[in-house]
Amino acid sequence: MKTIMLYSVFLIFAINSFAFSMDLDYIRNHYGQAASDKKICREMITELEKTPLTSVHLAYLGALQTIWANHVVNPFSKLSTFSKGKAAIVDAVKKDSNNFEIRLVRLSVQKNCPAFLGYNKNIQEDEEFLKKNKEQINSTAVLNLLDSVLK
Image (cartoon, rainbow, N blue to C red; front, side):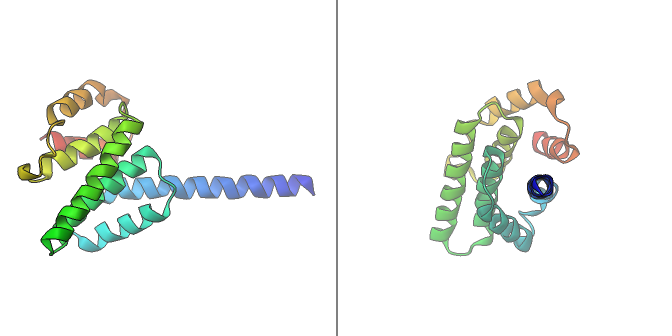
């Protein structure tokens, strides 16, 4: 009986861990579409808000929130949404400043947000960090994002 219970707990943990990593892979593969597809952007934000957040998940949530500002009409809502996303990215970087993917997400936002928002101070630093540490990436989706951001 103990063996069956132990096996069941392990199986539940394994399924939850697999689903969690699938979510990150989905986000990586669809992140680039969020700017042009309001539905995908909203779905990913909703799912991330329901998920326990690692620092990488927090960075993507923040980035998607900054992107969501493009889909909002009201100027005050745009600024509020962008600021909320920016704060999440800043928090993710503070938690894990040497994480390649977090720095890549921050760079993608900073290179694409309007200059008047003043969120562009880390572009050169992040580009240098990413070029220096590119070999540590195993994910095709992350490499594709890197290539598109560094163009």
